[in-house]
Image 1 (cartoon, rainbow over the protein chains, first blue to last red):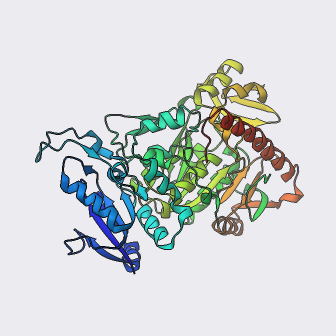
Image 2 (image 1 turned 45 degrees about the vertical axis):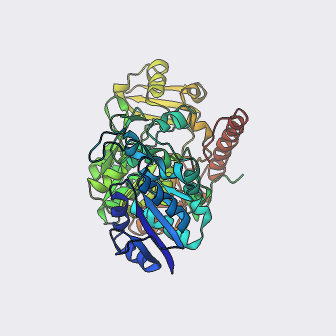
Image 3 (image 1 turned 180 degrees about the vertical axis):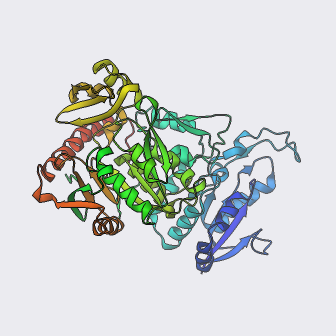
Length: 228
Length: 282
């Protein structure tokens, strides 16, 4: 049985809710794995040694040594470390933290997990869809590296994300054909379509990266071509 | 080079319903498939490219025959069909959604299904993916320049546009028919179309377009088991009239010629972009 741990740092539980939102698929997932650590779903106090997959949600508060230790511990104990959700993958809304927030005013620096320790996979999105979490976990169980490749790339390079990606990486590069994939992917409706191009409301964008990750013109893995 | 991508069979077809044929661009395949799906419980909502003021296109979720018929016809301008997919599922509560799009949009929806990072509870709701043949597309203002500057017809007066016989055609509600040679429209195409290597919507369940079939008919590629089952049901129910593709003129040869023209021309553009260090879709 594959041992999976769900670890939380500075996060809202949304990724965990998304994992639990898989309905009957959750049973398939839970049936296929041994959930050895999850503060919400399992009564275990310590992350066990030799976990196969660590799903870590949330960003790392650099001014909190506990958070740093948990990040390092997760890296050490997990064979595969997955930055689960936009906070862990690219910073997300915690990018806007600048201290003075209650209840700990001295906490001012939040970095995504991908910037603190080496991650194997990163699943962006706020939260990532249940389907994508299940697909990644099952692919990791089956060793389907071809499917996981885009998530591995995001773990390596995905430390920043926001609606600006659409302008910088797609429109400015003459790649946007106006499909609207980004607008549908945006969880906060910060992206609307104006004259066939995305228009990003910077006041609403939370920097989750769903829009650019979903764009077929930035990344189109070859395996999508296989249809049946 | 493979011109069409994977397919199970190709046929020439048109809708059996006269009302659909009257409003449709060619054989009315998309309208017929949508209406058949809604009326027979195969679909409970469909994405359409609706006509707005000034002959602009806007994506909508349709649930009735009337909405589909009102939107029938090609607009040749950008219409972000993907952008309403999630609201179809969330706000309209669609469980069996019909999607239609250009080849690039079909690729987008396939990516959303395979890598659904921001598409919670969407992948399993897509019941049918239809693709339309596409050489290139115009931004709305590019289209406006062609219609108003070159053809002298106001966008508000346009009732139909068409591409055929090497020309771009505009029909006004006053009965005017104006054309310009297709080569004069090239400067108004959106640049991003020039890196697209897909003419026949190779990843759709069913692809369709006028090229290859006689006037009033459309060519269909059935690509997936799902598409085949759907099409067979339509034919059995008498919603579609079909002919062997080999029995019609000009036939698949012309589709092949156009598909290869697009792939060769855009393949060069992709190579050129690589040479000067610009990213390409990969």
